[in-house]
Image 1 (cartoon, rainbow, N blue to C red):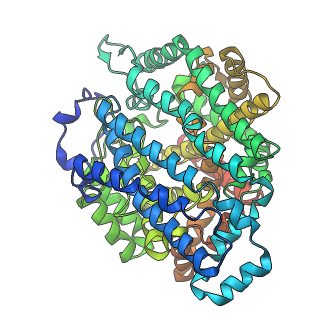
Image 2 (cartoon, rainbow, N blue to C red):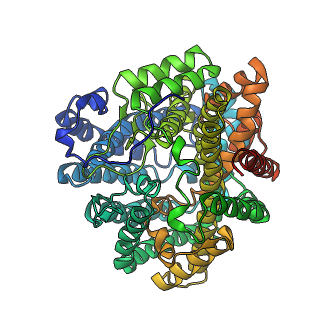
Length: 607
């Protein structure tokens, strides 16, 4: 690692029109312009009637069932680019009303199509097993859809009558409202004051600059940035509490309507993941909290602080080894590290870098964070808010893991099986991060540079296993409170979140009271019990990446089969195929034992 040392001086965030188009994604591969999108939207409206024409008919013959399943695939192939284009355009600048309107129209179409097809699950379930087997024998083309039909019939106890299903489908817009409001309020309307450093110079605080500010060597700047952000959230805490309360209530409503014991059970059943996998993660991580307490105490000692505050926990422990890694250099590192997955894999990555798949830099109004779009045709798109840091290099590897999962599944599976479920979604991304880390460690012998990487790896464990499980436990508490009929007030949410931080981080941290509002800046709480999968995915990825690096061609082949399998098998079976059994605590315990070993090496290098 020969890059120059990072100097913390963030550039002002530009307007999108002032950004270099070479670092913006090219959405013309989806639609050449907005007019073409509007034409596609208008044409797609006719699909509602095509779907509705099959109501009451799915069990009449094998030919009819086959025709409907083929139509359903065509609807997905038509709708996906319509929604994807509108969503991506809206995320370029969330304040642009035209793209908000287009996204709303796409959402309306989604609800309309869901309403028109609301009979599907009920009718699939009503087909007698003997008749369905006869259909498969009569029309071999139906075998393609056997797994999809089985998955629908698997949920028979939670499918309602046709009028009830239609009613729930028509309520889809209401269910999506809390996140839509949150996204606009948090992304477009919420503004933060500047934070001054020790020299008095102001630094812009945004969702994109906040974590880099917390990594700055200037402790005054870190503290002021921390207060600038969280004091702003506290000033609107009741609005955020009302939004999260509405989100949890709508989940509870749909869960009760479908006769689930809880919103958690309903959410996990949608992806065929047993509830004990979620609760088992929380239990396993709680049993390993002493390791996090050890890490926090080690951080405090290495930083030489009398008090370790929450704004100190992101700062590199080896600041004089901090580096600037340009976007171009990050590309090279990612390609080198992932070469173990084969030339075919890296050839697609080169296309992603050169053919406008990636929107690289932050601009005013751009959606915060990073993601790979669920859109897989013509190809995935990746949103970044890139800074020239090691963390952002890992973000590139992470999001391209998602993108490759989507790309390979779309090319090896029919549309009906090309989307992978969220339980496996974070595995491919984290395998890429692990391979990048192993690649960097293998090339680095100088003690301080190696300690810098170890610190980064330790932080991945803290933020991905421990912190995401803290989020998961918080979301679990929110769901339980809602299930008991309690209102999620700001006071109740803040108290619960503060107590979780106290328990997770332990006695070595001086717990800043403002951290109680951190939940308000986590958009994933609107993703329906999503965050636990970061922790399970990371744990699985540690096992799988070790297998790739030590298991030779067979391990790589198994992993690429996993990436190419979409949802053609249950998520638990897919991970077993790749080398991780998430029905046990073994991958979590093994990952956190590795965390402990990394701390041993860190102490040997620095203490």
